[in-house]
Image (cartoon, rainbow over all chains, first blue to last red; front, side):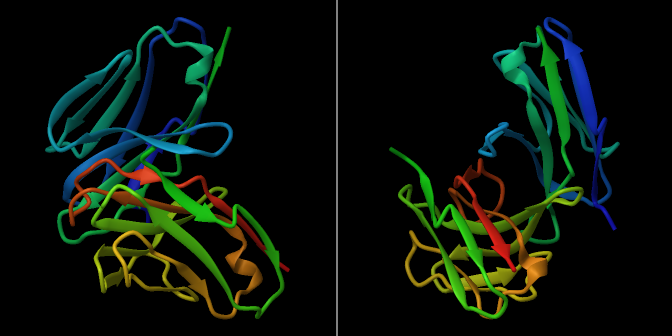
Length: 109
Length: 114
C-alpha cells in the first residue's frame, strides 16, 4: 500500500523553466508537507499546507483537499534547485507521517 | 544555533551487536521522530514521540526501540541489528505535540549491518 504517490519520479529541466511536481494521497489528512533533500542528503522543510496556497520566493505550493492532490511549482528554475522533492502527509486519524518516494529534479544551466 | 544533532553519522557494525543512535534537539520541541530512508521506498517512520515518556509506533517499528526520558533526547536502539536494517536514518523534531508543524531534520546516520 502507498498512501502517497508523487509524479514524475525524475525530472530534467533547462534553467529558467517553470516546474511542477505533483502529489496525490489516498487518506484524509490534517496537513501536507513538502520537503527538499539536497544532493548531500540533508532534508529541509519547504511548506506545510492544510488548505489553499503558500508562496516562498520562487516556490509555490497548492493543495486541493477535495481532490486529495497537491502541487509544488518552481518558477524560473535554477541549477541550485536540483534536489529531491518529497511530499509527506499527516493523516487525520493519527499522529504519523506518510511519505512519497520523491521526485528527483535536475536543472541544467 | 537551532539544530537537531545525530551521532554517529556513519556506522558499520555486525549482525547482533546492540547499538544506539543518539538524537538531540535544542529547540524545546515536543514532537520527535525517527525515519529510515531506503532506495525506491523513500522515507518511512519508525517511531515518534509527542512528549516526554510518550512514544508510539510508526510504519516500520519492528527491530527498533526508542525512549524519551528527556525532552531534548530521543535515542534509537537496535537491540540485535540485522542486515535488513542497513539504511539511512533521520531524526526530526517539530514544535507542538501534533505533526502539523515544520519538521527540523538531523543530518542523517548511515548504518551498514554486515
